[in-house]
Image 1 (cartoon, rainbow, N blue to C red):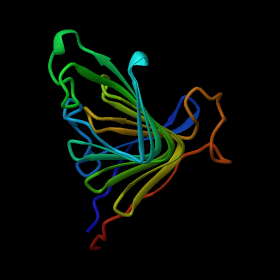
Image 2 (tube, rainbow, N blue to C red):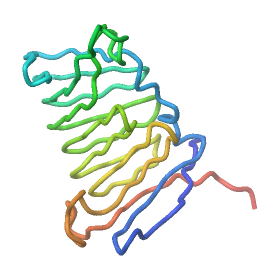
Image 3 (cartoon, rainbow, N blue to C red):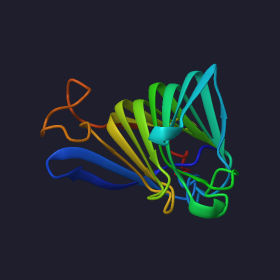
Length: 189
């Protein structure tokens, strides 16, 4: 039997918006963004003077049971004076602040998968924002839209029909609306 998602809100400021939550949908709740971040890719270029790493080609990043895949990523980091702790990546003296991913971005944890054209993972705010042709699935439940924001503290995901920063009505889909399919448990009459 599939878990059903609970519709909490529709219609944010004139654009179609949907927030999903519920025990089954909150697999990202309390995600440990301080856990080590592991990378694999075809190419990794460290730009130490710019405090960033460029990663490309079949990129996979894993952290505390969550996997992020994309064609390319830029990782912004800070050097901590005096090697102050692991900063969330397992390396003393470096703290990863943000990961920008592009090219068939997929985020997975447990039975939940999010897809989009680009993603921004802000490790400090514990937010993942995905833009462009986004889809959020859990089992046979599915939401699609223009923008997805996943709060890794609360586990709440919000999908709306337009991309961030776009004018009202500007969307990646012709309708500019969110669409979804939810599995309904069979009821005995």
